[in-house]
Image 1: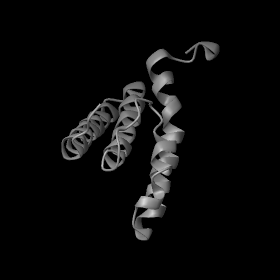
Image 2: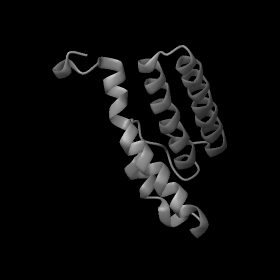
Image 3: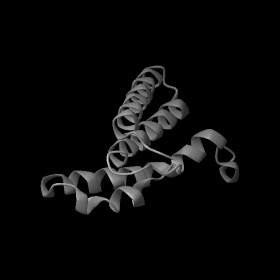
Image 4: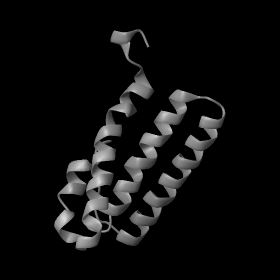
Length: 108
């Protein structure tokens, strides 16, 4: 797969913003499942936008390892923020499945 970094970064950025706006709307409606789902997708796509500057983003809902693998390519002033984003992505990734399929063992 060839990658046009500018197009991919812009696509992922726009997608992340759309998911964030959707999350804000769903939050105001007290749709907690929708809020969590949209938040997870926003964080995932913000991370993938950053990854796309350097390489093709993974199809995984948890691109945290890929993002952490690129840390050495960031200016030193950004590495803490990139690590923080990777940690958030890793924490939020399981919510994709939970918000999509529920938690059968918990009756949810």
